[in-house]
Every structure is written in structure tokens, then in C-alpha cells.
Image (cartoon, rainbow, N blue to C red; front, side):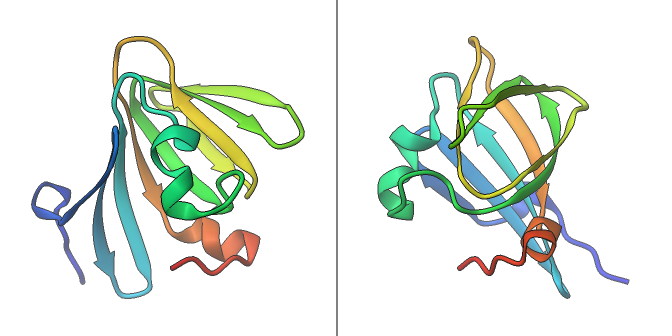
Length: 117
């Protein structure tokens, strides 16, 4: 058995985006907070060094709304209790005045065959 707690995880902040990650054996679980006004291309693009986000994501939204635009122009919004699976090649931002919070699982990297960090 393994246990971690997101409330005591190390906080990684980039502009208006905050990430808190618990590392278990073979699985990372990250609470990602996009504060109101946060946008990947504004807050994380320079850090990532890519035109759009190239990391896949499998996550459960626990609050707020995130709008995701794929490189091909397709658009989807994800809100509380939506489960999202995003392939590489997207931008995303918070909709409205409420922060969007989602819990991300590292399985996205396995599913899309991408190795991050």
C-alpha cells in the first residue's frame, strides 16, 4: 500500500498555474489549479518551450471550467466531474471567474506513448 497527500505536496507555480504532485511507485497524481485568467500559452508556454502543450493528460475536473483548443481547432470545455483525456497538441484556459482545478494521473503519458520530464 502507498499513500500520499496533495495538501502537503511540493508546489510548482508558473504564473497563474499551480501544480502539486504526489509520486507513488509508477504513478504520479497532480492537482493542477488554473486560477481565473490562467492560460497555458501565457503561463506555461515559455517554460515548456513548445508551440502548444505536448503533454497528454488524463484528469478529473473537481471545480471550475477549462476550455481546451486542439492544434486542429477543435474545442471542448470541461467542468466539475468531467473526466478529460487530452492528446498532445493543445492550449487551455480558465473560463469565467472561478479557478479550474483538476486531478491529473500519469496514465496519459503511458496511453499516448509520450515521456515527459
